[in-house]
Image 1: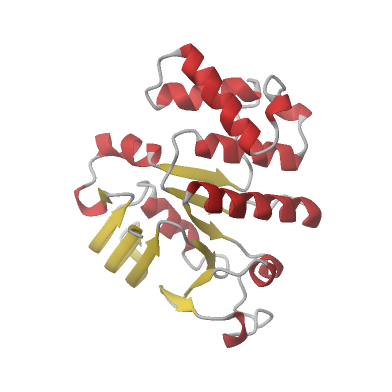
Image 2: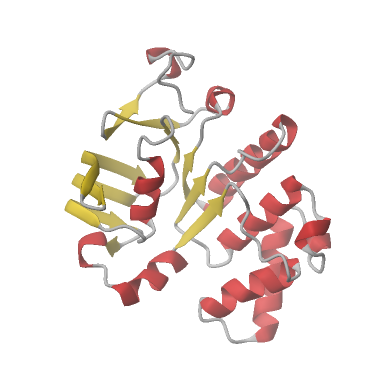
Length: 237
């Protein structure tokens, strides 16, 4: 196993204000890791740093074999091609079909061959169980189906790492469980690491994984759910 994320003595700032410091994070290529912490604690800042939207202000960092310290603006698209990013609000293009959404990402990732693009779109949609929706518009899909399409989009380029930012936040409990099972199946089948920001402690309890907790300006690992009470004021909200 190799590290897909490795940060040593990291510092993250926004507008010259330190958001997180003393970051020491290591995630290997087949691990499922939760990122929890209350709103405003820095979860989003950490994710943005991992996909190149924010710079690592100090320390050293590597993500999917990209050196965050040496990352230039022109390198960021290549970094993001090595990642899959799944958002809470799906972020599908509403004026295009499911296939056209996937094709847009492929075109931006350097794909040229139309037959290869269509074949890959079918593969990833089949993997997430919505291949029959290939030519549907996003508005015709349920929330769960839209999130499955978003996950398919994240899988286009066989990423080494999926960053999932509250992927079940807009879904009902039953659909949330379906998405969790899907993510875990992808982890097992594709040997892809997943870092999932969430405030849904029931999922953390039901589907155990490593837990990184953001708070007090840094990130610490929590070894087991029993080590803290998720219902205290410092919850994963």
